[in-house]
Image (tube, rainbow, N blue to C red; front, side):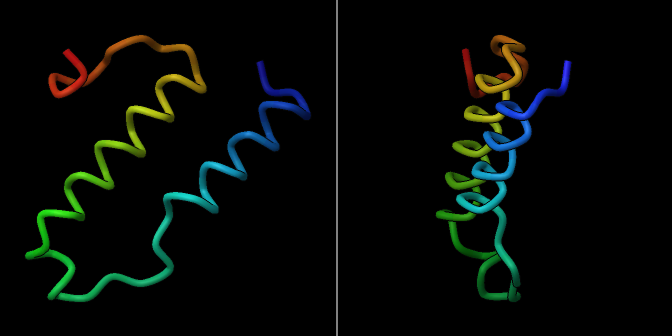
Length: 57
């Protein structure tokens, strides 16, 4: 259930992981995949979903 604490935590997550722009060069950078996985891993932790994605195994 959404509450003020979860809302603040999700806003912090967005501020940390969401890129405000993406270029073609970024799409070829392996770091983008690592960042995406890190972001998804953290989001599933915040939402207490457990290991949802294969890379989390």
